[in-house]
Image (cartoon, rainbow, N blue to C red; front, side, top):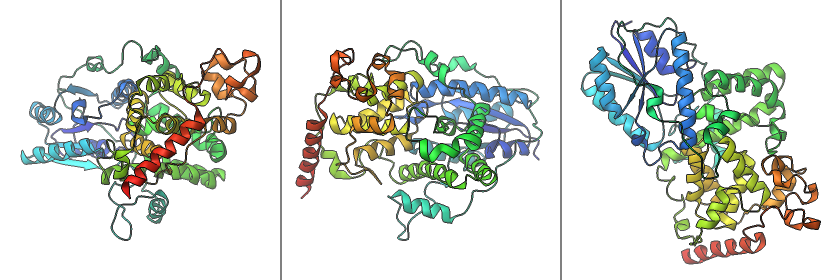
Length: 479
């Protein structure tokens, strides 16, 4: 054990348990945890409004957790490299420990920072923890990146189970003199005022989420002991409690994917829910697949995977339609309910995300990047890899994508997955008096019952035909 301090550089690993950088830095000697707010280094994908809100409260939770083990959180703002260099000079630290990030801008930044710190004689240690499999670690038999999920999933399974989780760090040694720190409020992370829909971000998010490692572990416990049994059957029904809602906790590192995998595996064996557990673990592997794709195709957040889709004839004059979609005023109940859920909670059920995305890119023919940008700003679980692959999947232009001609009918989707309109009425109270038979097509309700709700902004049948014609035009151009 060294007598010199070590800097633990915190990013999106806001937990104490199963935290390799924290564990190994603490075992080395004096520990100085530091969070550096340098969102400009993630451009053009700095955290959006909902993510900043979550980050503020997760950092507050991490600060409290560190205090309980006799440490504290140092907060700085500015260049990551210059701040780490300054802290090393101020404290006499001889080592920097951090957990890896995989977004292209973060990965490039971390490589530059590591090289510069090592050049000035500092020890640098970094660790994998954000995914189950390191992006780039799996290729197919031809040495090429996987472009389809199923063989990727089979290759993951062939590697066996993840390793055991690390325990909480042991005895923490703190420096005799702490470096100065900003207050968390100095970072200005919490959005002020109202969002585009006229709702308070802070109030709505706070009503629907508990943030931090403790809350994350409670959610994982609920999933393992209760929700997992119904997950395969109910995960597609937005009115039912059939999903985990772990995605923001995973994104901000309040849980590691290894913790989720191992705890669910153990609970599945104990409770006889191995088959249901495997269905969920497959989704956790899909998250890894998204990071794998982003690793190999770093331009995918900005351009389609398949070049022919660059020439797709998107609707040019779409601002009014885009605004209606963002505000949940399309006149399509299942889509509007999802968009309003997003305004109020910073989250949307995954089935509804797919339906809302399909309407935007196919019926409205608005570029998928517009939808990706809106989700990026409004989702508390906004993750560059997953957001990008989800939107390219919906648009039919990415890896393992739904064919472009697969166009969700939002009325049928609503009737299938929200037959009694419970979800729709929860977020669209003006439809509470419309009978179940018409709740997903209120414009057809007798006696003017649906007239308090806007008419659809687009005809679904004709817009589907136009979308297929647009697809045919780029196919013809490619031939």
